[in-house]
Length: 327
Image (cartoon, rainbow, N blue to C red; front, side, top):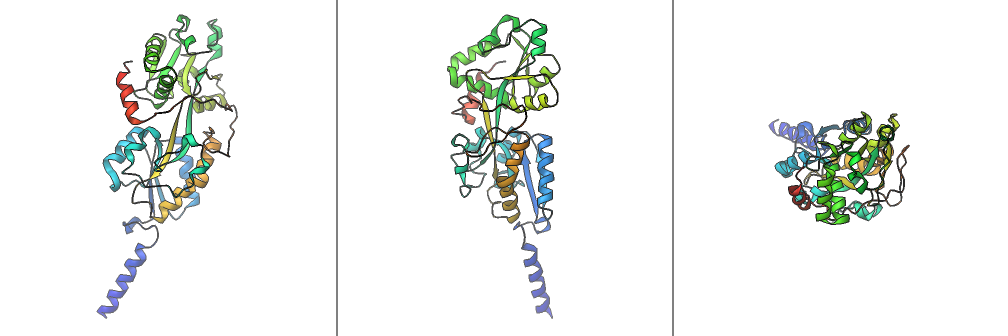
């Protein structure tokens, strides 16, 4: 009898280990996603994952991108996180020991400039910037629409320009980095020193300039294209401009924490992002191109965008440039 009970207990333990492949048999079908996208996008992702995988307990934990990276570095391979979502590419090199190798995924479907050469992360969004304007406010003040970055230095725009602070906003930093690449470091920093005299406020977040435009506090904003389009489609009287240097941008991607890639539930959820969810996100919110042979359209979203040179966008370069920023 004792031998029979021993065999039964062994069978029960074996059955408990089947499924997602987690060592935690009490919650073997749980998938934890660290995500840094906006709340409305997380809500959509959660809804779709619940529909697609009712057998899995998918938990999305929101945190800003920089905080997510810091948390992953602190936790390492023992992190409760399975899938890291919305990691800015400048941080990827730091996470080489934390993220799993994704070279089995077909990278040839993506544009070359959005592919992580290390193979630790798959692109999911290109977040571009623009010059957004409140034309009505400019007309009320009898001011011309600017046509270049140099125009923004004109004294008549004093107090009417809004820009995110590069030290606290990835959007602000991508504008800084794009002009460093276009003009050289010395000229770019000299430009922002002059521009600061016309800045209404260096906002703490990338959404600040568009909010200031919508509220009529600023007439010109160094802004996120996607957010500007969202506000236009909600009825805001804003317009989108691009200057000669092109649209600055950041690329964000997703990865799997090393050691979690062998869990079936993680494989299933991650592949669903790869095959379906990223495309749905682009169709609904961020259509800027990352695929070679696939494009998306959203009402009022600019097409055929000329992008700025964003090369050498490493975390080390970012830290070095931000040490020089004094506004």
